[in-house]
Length: 625
Image 1 (tube, rainbow, N blue to C red):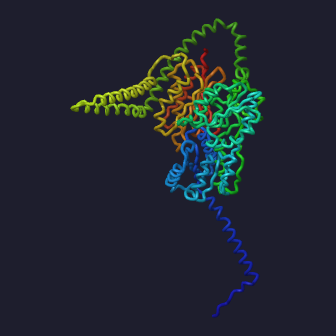
Image 2 (cartoon, helix red, strand yellow):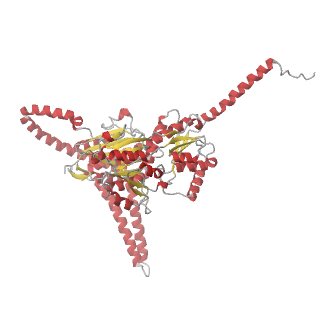
Image 3 (cartoon, rainbow, N blue to C red):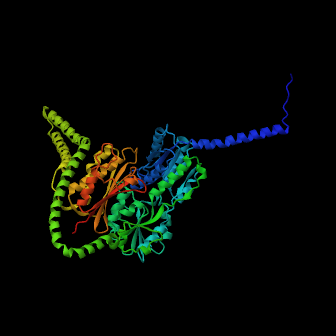
């Protein structure tokens, strides 16, 4: 049988070939989508600052909240701090590259998120070797650095636009007839997002006197800002050290400046608004994190990074501190349109309207009830005395239970100095038994024993303060000192749980009247509850305590955590007796705390933060001077 050559020229055969070609094209076209759908559900976050800084914690909180809101699938988040403000140079960069090469060698990363131009630049340099083909989402990059880096098309993100002229405009609104602006911060070339401000200075300050303290030491800055002329305003960018070899957190550096400043301070970062500045066009870090998370999720859901355009960030907003506005006599009408004002005290009528009406009604009725009220007053005094005695007993029992929960931590803290004392004692015996003992060395050993003994005594003193049973003491105490001692007491337990504790006290003493031991018990309950709430979190665990004045009549203590928050339907139940979400909890800690606060004529409540995590607040009346 001979071979029959097919007739490719026929119309039927051409139609079949065309149909086959179309099917193959459709299959090939669908392959990239399938590959995108299979992208690893993991994000690597690289921040160029310190991971313990409040600014980055809020960025990460905003990012995590947006990721957690996506219920379509679980997303793993890896986080790294490059700390480029304190460490830099080729050798350090090379050590980071080797570290990440080994650490993430077996990790399947879906998207890389960078915060800061320094972090973005290093990732672009390393990507072909460490993370080939992985798309990048960036944040905290200004327009100058974006233009300089010439990013490939699989890199997307938001450009942060901060203009010195905007801060100068706020300075003119805050200080009528402004004559002098004072620049405070690290050298412009060391700034992450404010480096371009140095180029804007001549044009933005036209017609104004300029006092340039950029790059000056902290000692020089504190001296100069305390003696500024009238009609001056301070423009604060960022400081990371004292200029003499000691590195500082951005919040601590700002507090040192604000402590001495005799003129209003305009800032550009939201966390500084509450620390003594009047505010300004500030960067809101949680919005930066949320934007980066939104772009990363779009990529994880299958959208190519090249189709997500780079855009100008909307994370900068005009936010102001009402307390500082009152201090400097600034009217709200002078502020930029759309400004947000925080820490504003409601008017007396709005705050006490129903109380005022109630008092008026009581005054009308009490004329005929004076004799009865006097009798009731006597009975009430007896009831309050019995109630306080019962509260003291109940609080003491709960403190004993709390001490039992902390016993392992306390034992560990005691074992260290006691072990050192034993070792030093044995060494001293050996030296004294030698033919020619070295007495100077024995003196040094005795000094070490004395130091360790004092350290152990301090642990026991703190424990005795917690466990002692004393009557209710109604005396004036410093709320800052009271809260600080609790944070110090729980520092070892927090470290053992890999939880960061931060205390941000008010800039001035807060005098309240009450029982220090019972108020410390309330703060301890709130901190321990926050640490328990974050037990299942792999990283980013932090508890922040703050004290501040609420107007001029009360002080507020806030305990914030980065945990999962409280379900909305349980916010009004968490203080009820025997309500608990813990497997082994009794549900009386928060109930006792509420009773103690109410006995101090205060109030306590719980809220959820918009960026994630819960916050407990208690308000106490300030003691009359």
